[in-house]
Image 1 (cartoon, one colour):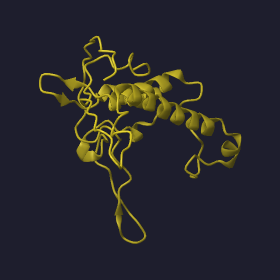
Image 2 (cartoon, helix red, strand yellow; image 1 turned 90 degrees about the vertical axis):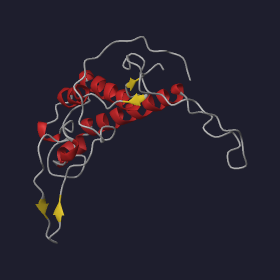
Image 3 (cartoon, helix red, strand yellow; image 1 turned 90 degrees about the horizontal axis):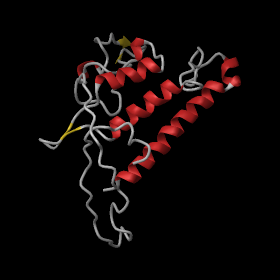
Image 4 (cartoon, one colour; image 1 turned 45 degrees about the vertical axis):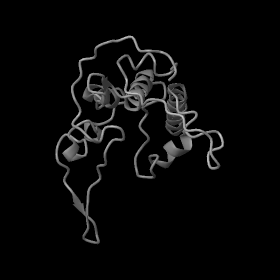
Length: 186
């Protein structure tokens, strides 16, 4: 696990490897490549794709001159990743934490992502506090109830949505305990 190994320094919940033999529909066997190594490679690829895409937007002079953000709204693109290694590292950390969740080994239970890791990402990447999604589930991980708006059609609309990977629980404050992670492929 070369990408997440230095980030995931706790017992991680990893499903037991279960190979299903080849069949007509699955000539290679089902889930033959569902390993820790493959997931780590996927995380590495997707994390860098996101960072590179965002850096592309942040450096795009045509977009900057248009006076619009990456969603086409009036405003400027906020620089978060370009020449910001602290933001990139916080993003990589959070991405690894969400994909290799902490495990309570005594109960064989995945634990939610730590609130401190979530907030570190938003703080490091200089998101305004109203965009943070590390709070209570009942408020779509916001810190207070959202005031809905009413559209021209009379429908009530909420803008918040759950932050992927941290939707089920109020995030705990964590005291990290450092363990040696088993660095073998399952």
